[in-house]
Amino acid sequence: MASRERVEAVTKGTGFWRCSKPATYTPGTCKLLRVMMKESKLTNFQQRHIMDTMKRDLEKEKRRLQNIFATGKDPEERKRKPPPVRQEDPAPELDRFEELVKEIQDRKEFLADMEALGQGRQYRGIILAEISQKLREMEDIDHKRSEELRKALATP
Image (cartoon, rainbow, N blue to C red; front, side):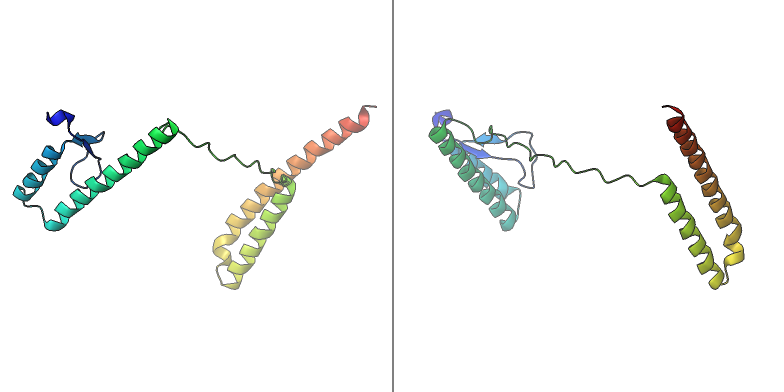
């Protein structure tokens, strides 16, 4: 007869037991749980927490069932559509040649700052090597652009 009595739902996350899905208990089982909690010497706070969670879960289940009876659908079944993804305008690509000019300027400023602090000798070789690499890359870009321009002018 206990299976025909009202069933209360207890969900996971009470802090003491972790289950993969909510367990259902009859009122008799709930009384047994209370006795077991007292025997396990849980504090009053822990016992209250478990009972409050059981009550809140029961209220949540009531609201869910009311929605099912009213609308014919389980509210959890309705899934929200994700917000539309904003399509941002791509930032204008910086010209690599201009980037290199800025990087060289930064390196020169860094070297000047280090020399002002008396550390110029330590960084001078490294910074000059970096600047020369950037200059070579700029020469390659200039050479490619010149070839493209020649080809464009050569074709009528």
